Length: 236
Image 1: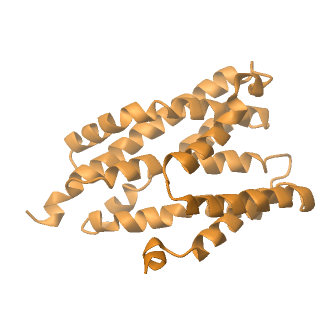
Image 2: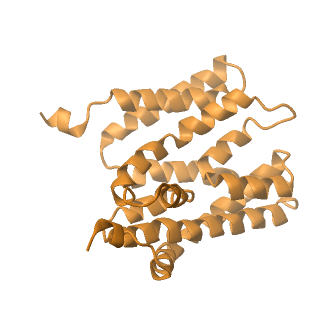
Image 3: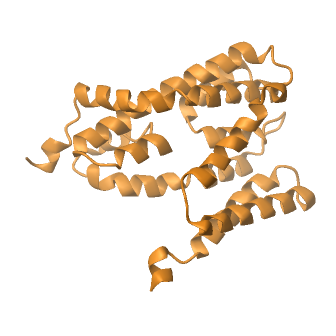
């Protein structure tokens, strides 16, 4: 069987990928609800909120850009923050490229529209190229659907929630990032870039213009992460 035949995506692969990702995607509803509420509190309309979730589909970046939202929007910092937060997609796409390289360019890029951390990680666990692609696309559809459902719930009920913090909705993003920090990596070296990002962000909040802490923290963490020696180098 050739790689090209092995990469042929069928409806069965999509359904299988959707089903595998469905249980995990249910948790995305709460995350989307928190974003919907936060967006309304920041001044976005319900339509703008739904369009942002539907077209952008990048939870962490969407939360971060809300901090820049106002009567005037600093476009360049907003673009820089979005690129900094989503830069990991470059590595994710490169890692998944061997399973897509035999596809025509149009299908290859279209299959990455719904790329996110969860469906990428599950698709990298193994199986044929078609099965991986089914998880990437079918799982992405599951995640996108629940993200939109959650955002819609936030839009519908958000206008009646004057104090999101009373429901703990303001803490969801922090809990999500904390779970990323302690739930995945067991190597203590991961604390270095996270710590650098936190310290840089706190310093920027104290001494730099408003909203600068978001991009300063992201850049500081990224630079420290790049400077850290790899595990292979540290063992050599």
